[in-house]
Image (cartoon, rainbow, N blue to C red; front, side, top):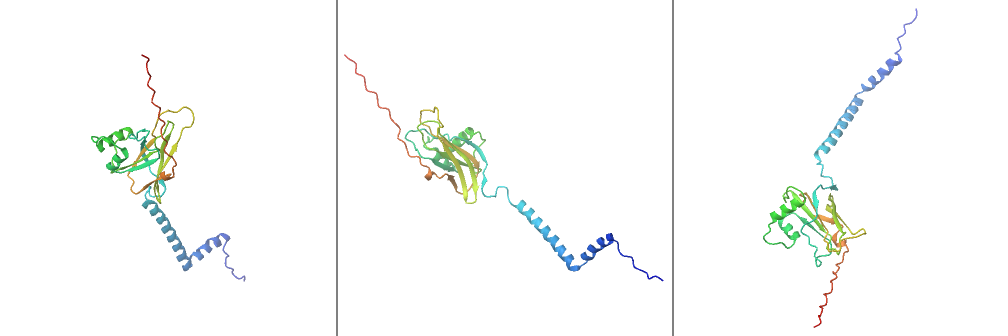
Length: 221
């Protein structure tokens, strides 16, 4: 009488049964559960960080320029300042100081309305806006230009970047000019530095050449 042999598991049965036996180990089940919980916690942390950080909080971001143009209160006075200067304007008093001597009858509200019209913006409200002005000084000829290229909200402070250029050749206006630029941005608190700094700009004053007075003609008797 032949002995009875138990049926050997097929190759497929062995593949299916091995993981089941391994997964049945208690400590391995705990390890896999901890791994899944850790992965879910990491995903949740990343999502919360993305939601909680405002879009404009990253240092070094550019601040949106709402309007730009020339500063309408600059005068091409031959005896005026020849060096570059800048102003940060957040109040009506600072506006009057940057605008220079004006008739006493002109109110700050009228100045703001006039400036807003020139810059093609509905209104200028110092509760909402900050003005940045740059002047490159009085020049002997035309062809000079100054521009505020960008305003940066940096990690070490806010920075207004500006650039002044001179004539590029050819005919230019033979008259005194005063290149200026102004930009309006949303209200930005804290110091705003200028780059390049005005102390580093070499622009010595140049005395204007005065024409000699004509000699009086003596008519013969």
